[in-house]
Length: 295
Image 1: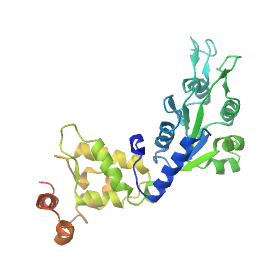
Image 2: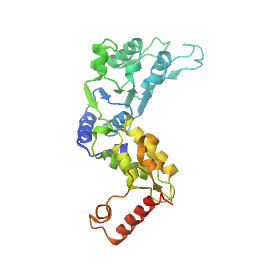
Image 3: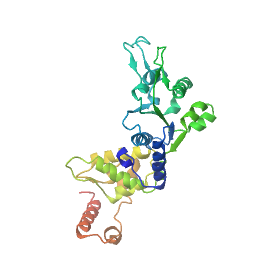
Image 4: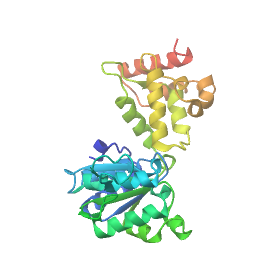
């Protein structure tokens, strides 16, 4: 059921993530999600929201690294008319917009100590004060924070407020990198090929060389890197056939130049699982296309 939130995988580390999502969804406690960039932290946060009692209320996502302190405070807490130059009208912040729902704060490690104090105050009191205002407003928001670096380590080094870290990490989920998810590359590949398939067009199909290149790559950019690579591959594919040349050079490697992309032995590649005649024909045609460079 989690696949409707975009989470795909059956590896042991991902099964543990699914269990933690189910547990977190039953709770209303603050939550900290950690993991490398591109692992899907926002997808996990959205899945928790979708399976929680707050599901019918808003899910609001904010990338804290993309805003200065001043903009971040005005975006989150709102402001009143005349609070600063350009504030022509009163405006509610994202805490108010997420009232009754979930507020996801990504890249918290990039925020300043001054902003962290303001955030901690709101989380502790459940009240938000718009920039320039004197009155506070009560909000009922579940906060989910995320970071691609260890907030615990930053707190120990006094580069992040320890009290805010402990407030955020009542519950915590660490998302594994794609390289630690054995077998999930194939599942994700099938998922994204179907997602990027042109309406009415042929089903995208990977040559053996392309599939081997995808399986062998280290994925420093994690799932996001795989997604972007397959989007490119589907765009460049001819007749739906994705060769190693359709993949980014850092993934295709030698396979794009024909090195190591020769067909597997006939008995292994075509007959080992005793396919039916239609499947055997499909595999044979694929083998010929690879040998001829899809000419």
